[in-house]
Amino acid sequence: IAPNFLDVVSYIIKTDGLYQGSYPNMCADRYIIAQEVAKIAKKEKTNVIAHGSTAMGNDQVRFDVAFMAIAPEIEVLTPIREMGGNREKEQEYLKEKGFEVENIHKRYSINQNILGVTYSGSEIDRVEEPDESIYLWTKVTEKKPKYLKITFKEGIPVALNGQKLNGVEMMKELNRIAGGYGFGRGFYTGDCVIGIKGHIVFEAPGVLTLIKAHTALRQLVLTKAQQSLGQTVSEQFTDLLYIGKFFEPAIKDLKAFIDSQQKLVTGTVTLKLDLHEIQPVAIESDFSLINAKIATYAQGCSWTAKEAEGFIKLYGLQNKIAASLQKKFFQKGE
Image (cartoon, rainbow, N blue to C red; front, top):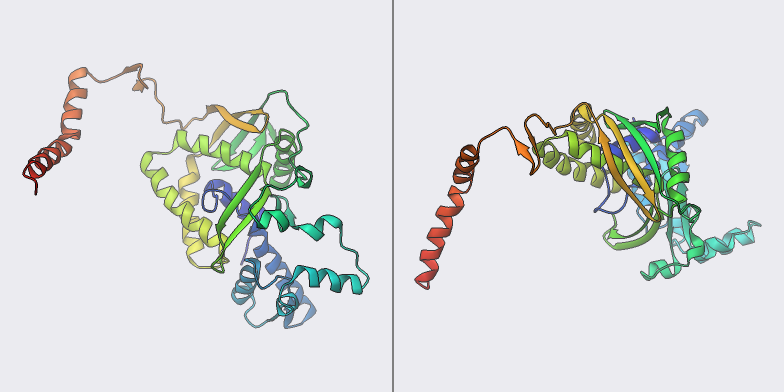
């Protein structure tokens, strides 16, 4: 039922999908993990599987609901949840069984995949700034400004600086380059699936770079109405992806709109990398809605002054009528 992880990631990019405006759904790999575990269970001819989510987090929902959709006949065991989900007890249990736990994992819960790294625990759970030493991908190694060119085809990044790369190669390279400028850190406090607020720190230099570039290209080639409707679809898709509902039938419907909308999101974006910052500085596209023959913003246009005055008169007419009525109403003190 589920595509591969990079196909899921492609929709995060095509929708500029940041959950509640901040988090790039790095947790989307849970659906792929669930699918692969279900495949192994079928191969091994067992109807029982287990996962290690605690009772407190979002992943227990993502895994359990995914298994309900893709393998409803399978029984799901959750030993860590049954233990109460206490990290210290987990560590004690592992130690008793002869497994050492790294020092950093004694303080933090760390998740990592090709999109980035998330951290929780200790001072992060208290919504305090973590120590600089925790960061794995965004240590500053570059300070001299640099330019990158990312080429998109139908909303998908296909080349970096003119070199065609597949999804894995593209993400790894951007994680390395953008991370070297200290770009891609995030501090996110948001609404969890289970009804509480959660706070995490994350690093996602590659996907955030792609979203920056994609946003700039999208703004150039899509109409205002397309972007407005696209924002609504993005919020719906991003929310479902976060809350464990990737196998909800509405996802297929949303994907159909997204794919249609992205047909002309094709072109090349030039990004300027600087310390802790990346900005799109130039865009090239055959589908640009900026047409110098019709008008250039605040410089010249193909219509007359009288035509502009007539438009403004009609455009503001309803406001004029409403303001006049309100003035009379409030003057009476009613």
